[in-house]
Every structure is written in structure tokens, then in C-alpha cells.
Amino acid sequence: MKRWQFWFGVAISAFFLYWILKDIEYTTLWQKTLQANYWLILPGVGAYFIGLWVRAWRWHYLLRPVKHIPTRAMFPIVAMGYAGNNIFPARAGEVLRAVVLRNKEDVPISASLATIIVERVYDGVVMLAFIFVNLAELSRLTDNITLFRSFTIQDVALWGSVLFFGVLVVFLAAAMFPNISEKVIRWFTERFVPQRLREKVLEIAVRFLGGLASLRSPVEALMVFFTSVVIWLLETVKYWFVMHAFRFSISFFALMLMNGVVNLATTIPSAPGYLGTFDLPGIRVLQAYQVSAETAASYTFVLHFALWFPVTLLGLYYMWREGIKWGKVSTLEQDTITE
Image (spheres, rainbow, N blue to C red):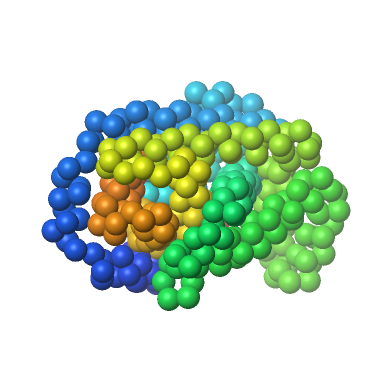
């Protein structure tokens, strides 16, 4: 909490929350929240946990060239990672996953981090696909989906495409041409890295390239993409169940659009739990579909909590079972350096 990055994220979250709350009628917001049928959220939570199991299988699949680890062994680590992302700054849960996997399965941190980054890139590509599937609908709603001032969903899609497709191309090239990639890394290391650090940097880079091995086959790359689509469709199912708890109705494709937009927006630095960066885009999408601001805000806040709380509780349980405490998580960056 003493680092400037934490307070920078808090400031961004506060900015997003200001844009949410400045036009909300709080009494109506509270009434909408009380009137929801919360029993309908439970099957959505079930769908989300099925998606979490698929995430564990996807990670198992990506790690196969490094080490074969059963999905049932990966699931608690994935849950811990997502809980860590929800409660610690700067997505420390990703590093937590890598460190726990190193401690339990002796997988190099740099290799597992490579697979985790690949997961995130594919997630971003699927989110963009959810937006592109709704391009016709998006063009109809162009004038209505402004996140704040002149920043629109089109801007999110544009910059997201540049980022995620660009990184994906680099990773696929590095995976398919590992020898050339290693030579390029050596060239840059020899010219730009201090001599005392070169050996360590090269060692980490080679392990990182090893973590990309699952992308060398087009079939396996497509399998990772297909699995990612299943994961995010299951999460959209949760959006659908929570929507019915609030008694308004938009199409499943509209919820896919909302899912894509809010999750791309959560790549923006924010306070732990993606506070504000998740909520503002979701509310704006719903408002474009003529859902009232108070209903949209109530739904989005409850959806956010329903996505945040169950996996955080499960992850904290697994962290408690493993004996992982706050102080341990706070030293993870050092672990990644000294692996």
C-alpha cells in the first residue's frame, strides 16, 4: 500500500466511480437492489465455477510441454490466483499462482508466468471477439455508449485490438521459431542488459520461451482459443442469471458485448477488485439498451460482487489450507526474481 502504483489505481477507481455516481438517484438505486431475486444468482455462481474448472484445465493444457499436472491439482491454485487478483494490488494473484506452482510442482516461475500471460492474451482476444460479433448492434448504439466524455466502446475495441492481437502475434512467432527467438533475445541482452545480469536474464527468457511451447501447434493454439470461448460464455451465463434477478431483459448477445467491454476495461490499472473499471463500462452498455441508470447500476454492482465474492472466498480457503498469509504474498515479487 506504500507504493505509488497502488494509489494510482485507487485514484483511477475513484475517477470511474465518480462518473458512475454523479447522476444516480440513490434512493431508487437502493430500492432496485432490495427488490432483486437473489436466489437466481446461485445457478449463475454454479456456471462460473464450471468455468473456473475449465480455466484450470486450460492451464493444465498449456503447461503440458513443461510438466503434466492433473486439472484437479491445478484448480486450487487457479482459485488462489483469482482470489489474489481480487484482493491484492497489481494482479499479484498471477504471481501467486506461479509461486505456488513452483513450490508444489517444481515448475519454473518464468515458464508458468509465460502460460499465464498466454491465458490473458487469449482472454483479451475472446473479449474482442465478443465485441466484434456485435459490431452491427454496436454501430446502431454508437451514439449511446460513451464511457466518459468522448471515450467510447469503439476506442476500447481499437486499443484492445492493437494490444492483444499484437502480443498474440509476437507470442505465436516466438513459439513457432524458438531458436530465432532465443537468438533475438541474446542479441538484445548482450547490448542492453548489464553484464552481471545477462546470464540470469537469458536463463529466465529461455524458460519463458519453454512456457510458450504449447502454441507451436496450430491445433493446440486453436484448442486454447476454443477453451477460452467456453470459459467466457459460461461467465456470460452468469450475467444472464443475474439479469433475471433484476427483472429486465436484453439479449444474450448484448450480455456478451457487456462482458467483452467490462473485461477489456479491467486491464486499466485500478484498485484491487477492479473497482470502478468494471462497473462504469457495464452500466453504460446497459443504458444504451434503455435500462435505467439505477437498475443498470444496481445490477452491475451485484454482478460484480457475485463475480468477486465466491471465488475470493474459495481462494482464501485454499490459501489458508496452504498456509499462505498476507506477508507471504507481499514478498512474491522477490520470489519471481530469485526463483
